[in-house]
Amino acid sequence: MAEPALAGASARGAEAPAERDPAVDAARTGCLLAVVLIHLLMVTVTADPATGEPATVMVPTRQPWYWWATWVLQVMPLFFVVGGHASVLSWRRHAARGGGGPGWVRLRALRLLRPALVLWTVLALACGAALVAGAPPELLVMVLQGVGMPLWFLAAYLACQALLPLTARWHDRAPRGTVLALLAGVVAVDALRITTGAAWVGLANLVLVWPLVQQLGFFRADGAFARRPVPWLLAVAAGCVLALGLLVRAGWYAPDMLTNLNPATVCMVLLGVAQACLLQVAAPALARLMRARPAQLVALLVGGRAMTVYLWHLPVIVAVAAGWFLLGGPDPEPGSAAWWAWRVPLGVAAGAVLAALSVPLVRAERAPTALAPGRRAPAAPRVALAVLLGFVPPFLQISWWLSPGLVLAGAVLTAAAVALLRGGAVRGPRVPAGGAAATRRHI
Image (cartoon, rainbow, N blue to C red; front, side, top):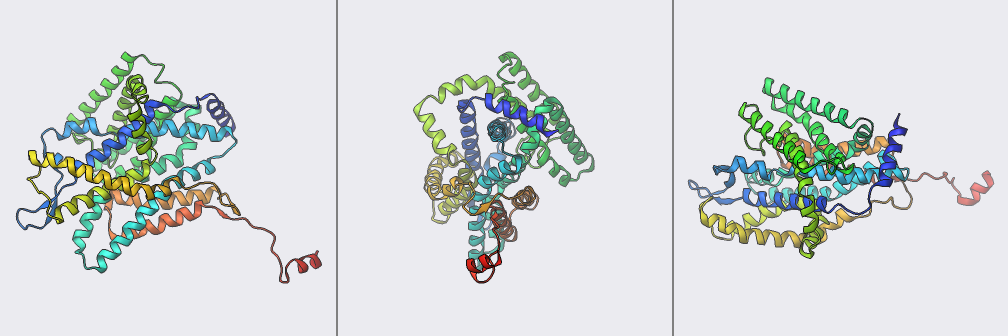
């Protein structure tokens, strides 16, 4: 049953244009920059008015415009759309060359887990050093919770990549049926969570919502959005926003789209459809933008180290904000005009530190994924185990936040996952004692 789908994927891969989609490159870069900007605004280290001790404040959440701003700035669905577009084309090229699912998943997982291993290791060493130095455990936990906020993405994207060979085959066989089946699962999980009040039930949507949004990228890669007229795309986007408003007004979902992110809900699906339509509407303008040298340079610098920037931007922002506070930098009232003004130099400082750190850190992201001489490709069960080991720590972080114990587990399990993905040693004939001469006598 898999062969016709694989053949179809191979044919599509052969027909797909080799050049990059400038709209996808622009959207990916824009999404990443938006995430960095949002976290820059969310992280504030200030003096507690009552005790004078360091405290964190998320200023945007106190603003009257916060909830509707999240409808515009919640770009994670779009990130999965463009990720699905690029990934399915990569899979089809791999399948066209005769490659299988485990081999493709191994390559994609390595590109995610190697940079993550560096982060987990640094965090584990920093936690150990802080505890030995006598840092207050509650302060350490507060810092880890701030640093670990974006790690859910690692679990979600790793799951999407691991499932992609399967979901791509489903898409080739029954594209609409696949979407409807995944959507039914998302709605069922949401209904169970809402009716029971058990928030943990919603965690199941991590492996339903994001693969479903990723499917939209498959449709884009097939040209489905490009074949639709602009009025149709705008009407669908408006319909999704209207449906989102009705769901929020019914009281089933929070009005801000950051709350609806984890656990993921059908709100992310509606946003994903709207954003996929608007991406197609904006595609000609984005293509013109990407012909400009400055835009190309930003896409090259940011897009060429996307995982490094994503994994490290929040630790850098937290470190810069804490250093700013501890060194006696200006500490205006959070939310005041002065506070907003000081976001600019803080952002410049954080950007400079991140740019400098990314130079050595990006090596893990760009490390060769080819098997080393003398190593054989890991079998499918080994790849599956590696994906599971890499998935568990960031998945647990969604519910329990980061702690020193979870950071250590993340370092150990991710190291084991990377080791599994490197492949096993090639087994040659066993040479008996006495070396080659003994072997010749035996023969």
